[in-house]
Image 1 (cartoon, rainbow, N blue to C red):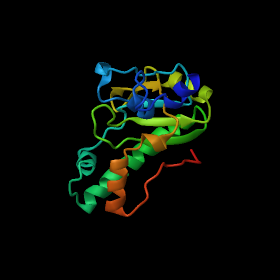
Image 2: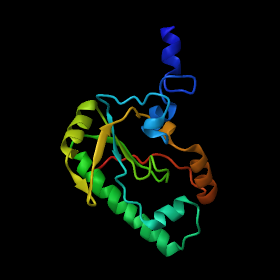
Image 3: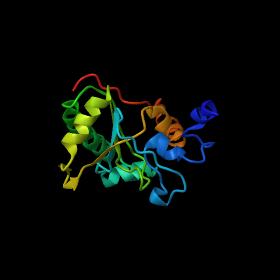
Amino acid sequence: MAEHLARIIGTEEDRVNCPFYWKIGACRHGDQCSRSHYKPSSSPTIVLRHMYPNPPVAIAIAEGQNVSDELLDEAADHFEAFFSEVFEELYKYGEVEDMVVCDNIGDHIIGNVYVKYSDDDAAKKALSALQGRYYAGKPIQAEFTPVTDFREARCRQFVDAHRAFTGLNGGPVKNDVP
């Protein structure tokens, strides 16, 4: 029995835990979800909810609208500046194994930043240091998340569409340098 429960936790077969929350640390149903949203007391991964201030052109891109090359370049520059600034700050608290910024425009996930540290202690330091801080005039909403494998957190439909459009094989951004 315990083996069966361990196998199904966080999957569609699990009738207790929300599989979406387990995989992406967010659920479109929020508090109205009929399943439990597991919020760990410790984790190597933190989520900074709605931290990335998507410019309007980023929303247009995510919606699949045609955008000029000039606006694409501006959006890329905006994102790169954000990513560098946030990564450099978060690296102060420990080795960052991975950092993912969501470009999904669902209300529950838009602008979420997921940061996986090499260990729980580094994530705890970051979480503690970010309490009461602001970014772009908004309070930083940081918490531990059960997400540790970002491959499962990717929207396959979006990734497949992105690959077809760009010819690229999307993947996580690995960062070796602060």
